[in-house]
Image (spheres, rainbow, N blue to C red):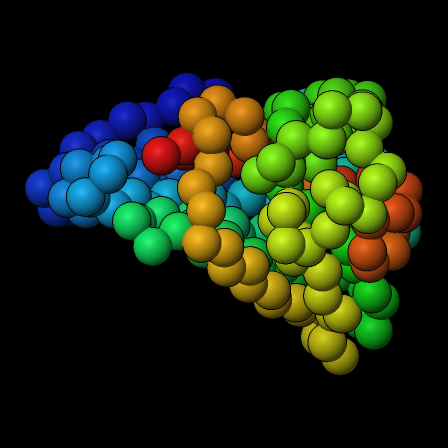
Length: 191
């Protein structure tokens, strides 16, 4: 399957689409100090062995079925970073843990690396509550509603470092633990 790249519909807007997946990136006034940046990625989960590969991989279809949807938005400006997560097609009533991770998704759930940390713990893997917490990481935990949909927003007054935040991992439980049940590669942009 090919990937289509087009100029988008507005000045400075780029759109990349592949099948049912899409990426929209919009540097509103130029990315970096004084400007703003937004990114939106949408995909459907598929197993790592799927004939048609997806940026969104499910490792446990009992919690994240193939075909479940994910939509991630990043908005960054001089005030900080906002990450918004929307999910659909999940297990109704289940509590999921979701975090931004450092690596890209792969067939092995460990490929996504550790949680992205604003102030990186010098000891890895990070287990210290001084570093592994919702103020220093991007946590997007949610409970799926009766329709299997969920939404979460994380706001921070800091910016992501360039090329160090590369995926969103869904865990089987909220907080800092839980098995990795799905992963979505997202090219987050640093400031």
